Amino acid sequence: RILVPHTRNNSDVWRTWSDDDGVTWAKAQMIPEGSAPGWNWVGTGPPASLVLRRSHRGRIIVPSYHSKYRGNLANNIVHGHVMISDDDGDSFRLASVGGFGAADKKTNENQAVELGNGSVLINGRSLANPLVNQDRIQTRSDDGGETFGPT
Image (cartoon, rainbow, N blue to C red; front, side, top):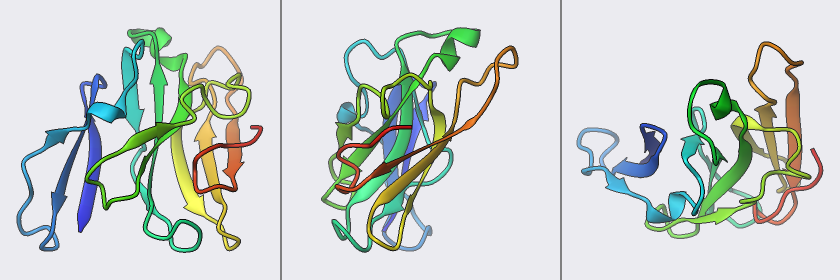
């Protein structure tokens, strides 16, 4: 299965999929669990999700980020989180909804990789604003993406 989680206008999270290597695609469906109350902006990726192969084999991790604000520079006051699916993308749930680590780094545009020991490493960028220092942020999960450590 090729699974494509994505957003619509950075307001809703959706998914589509193909079970024939991209020849045909399912009609996109909203993922109601892809956002939480008070989130007015949500992003996935970019661009990829991750299927775990070591710990929590088959679990899908979708690196994402969210904000309670919407509009221009306010969109950059964001926090990283992940969406998790344990059923091949049929349903999802949110993890780290308060942000990674102490939620003080405003992590966005996150990527995930499964390390050799089975832990999940997130690499994202910090507050995307040319008026402040921009850094790469990393955090690690040792429980299949349920929780993440300090950034």
